[in-house]
Length: 498
Image (cartoon, rainbow, N blue to C red; front, top):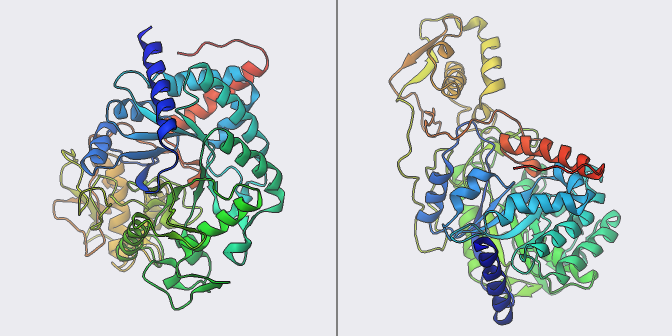
């Protein structure tokens, strides 16, 4: 009864808010909180980090129970995610969607609960590389979930969205933007649904990937500092890739009759390691330029004075267990390192001029595993291969921060990464007698030899397929669980899951 009364209050508050607020002109800065990491801080420590930095909006890639419990009572607005692998099950029936909403949304939206505002249904499900794999499930899943939210009186407060990759639309000039021909029908259905339910369009924009993927892409056009290669589109002149990309989407929406639809940037950022142009300086210049640009409320040529509703920076911290299929930089998007320490000065425009580090982080002892100075390293290749197949060695690659520390330094870095991952187990620094434990920090310049943390909630050794399928190891278990549940429901078998 108490839970039902609080749900009614949520619904009443949302209805009252909708009477006085349409879509605000000023943008808000949030962050993406991923969890595909070997060394993970406790969720409560991450929430403290968010609060200390006055970050009031966070986007998750799943509905991890530990994260949502930590967010309860924090006042932080949350976007939870449904991985693409779960769309088929949720599209099968409202029984499946009812169960998902009950377990992952309504149970947390109680007094002093989590403030869940959005549910991201899939993550870039229309990505061209998926070849339509998830496309047919999106609309049925949305319709089922909308009904399920209505059943618990949350449909007017919690909005359904579908984060899209920028490859969903295309054009040589922003004003000519259009959705890919094979997506025209489903995009028409999607934006009609979003518009009917008061939901924004969510898109992920990555100027870094444009620069990384093309040697012809003007480097200064990726940033906000002005360019010698502006794009002229009629009377409009674009000096940065972000505005050009954003307005291409605006034009594509206009062609479908929804030119005024609110837009949220679900992911945008710059990595600090693992590739040429992925470094601390470039990341700071891009992210600070982005924040200043968005918070200036200048908007874009096609939407002057109307910037995105919200912008979620990718990402809060590094995720050292992510797949490197897109590139070694995938593990280095964080504005904080894995242990919650700020990588560079950044003013989020949220009341603090500099980022504040995570508090009370519990590290393992200050010791490292390095190559034995007197050892014969001629047969070390297999040991390095083993260490780097398990631990993260992406900083050693071309363009990485540790690429220039020499052969023995590379071996030591690989050994130490493995050693820390094994929680400094003594035997994990043996490597057939080639490794030795040292108490002197072997870090060199920007090449940081890490020390693991002890306040790890769980160590995920899974590999995500890409950024679009980012989730924790518990999330992968949930995929399998929900696929099985969906199959049982579709066969008419009643299931009861706690």
